[in-house]
Image (cartoon, rainbow, N blue to C red; front, side, top):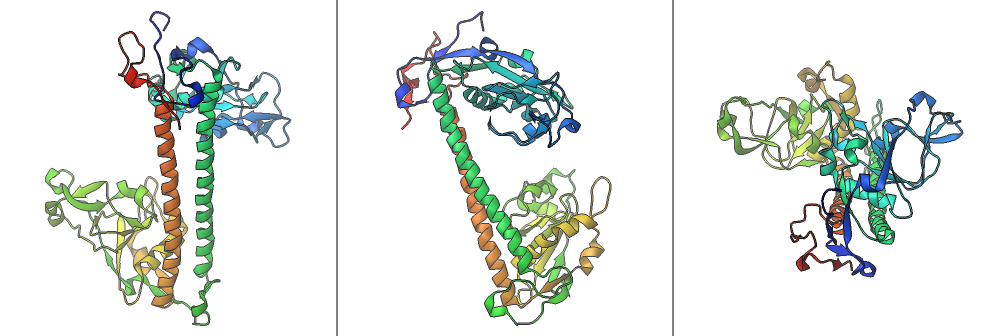
Length: 442
């Protein structure tokens, strides 16, 4: 950077009080920071009765937060350690995934012992906000990943990250204003996430009471109109629903695939356990269907994985085929509600996980499902239970969508609050053109 002129520009969005207060300047981390590395801190050295606060690498970066203002871990170590200063930016120096190395956070605590594999980026706290810098580094994730080395375990070194380019506003007050704005969004996302988690916990507790416990014939909680209506009856699913099979068309035949027929496979594991499954990662063709044992199952069919991701279940929203890794049931509508069966399978998921066998891929054999019994009440009571839980699922889904929308809003806001290093609306002299001048943040 010292051998070429630094670029200067302004972001697309700027707070009113900083409009016209000077252009931002392009820097490298090496221009403004010094770099250090934490000392080794084994897990055995972390003890509740320790006198010193500490951050262990694994704990910090598996529970990522952009600003650290609270630390729980303690250690008895006090010699040959590295202590934090307020405004330090912390980053991992190694991880099993490249994206793990693009994490950065600012610590607002002094004299916390920092463990090994933590890179400390220290700047002049009077001139640069650590919170701003940490958020900007996160924003530049793709550029950080270009600095990562390694194949099995990935590494990020100070000699590489010090070359990272970023833009700095002329006043620390503007840096902090941006950090505070994004922090308020983070707090809102956290609150909405806590609300979603509370709904999930409520649903879990409710399910434990709406279905009989092991060895019981009635649940703890019943809707008023069904109290005293007798015990639930244990029956094989085979007597209540038609069990169907799945298959994988020959993968060496390209014409068997990409034909518009939705086909549930292990590639769709992340779409399961969410009620309906609407789409599949892989589609097969009519030709593939005809030349294999795969069949089309009607909408409303309940499926459960018996292999990798064992116990995950879903309801087909439309006609779909499935791979041999799934059991599918078409419920007899006069005996068994498909949504009731889905929630029964959700309750049984820990059981499925415990009985699955195998060293590489755990699986449950078909004979188990042929003999699988469930306890059921009347069809009307089944539907009431399913409707109750479905309404909770709808609330959880809506809450998740709200969180996703906030995260998307934050990402878009960051793109406008930080100037782009690849901005193509710069003139030959490196200065922002009139069309790129900042707008005011309302």
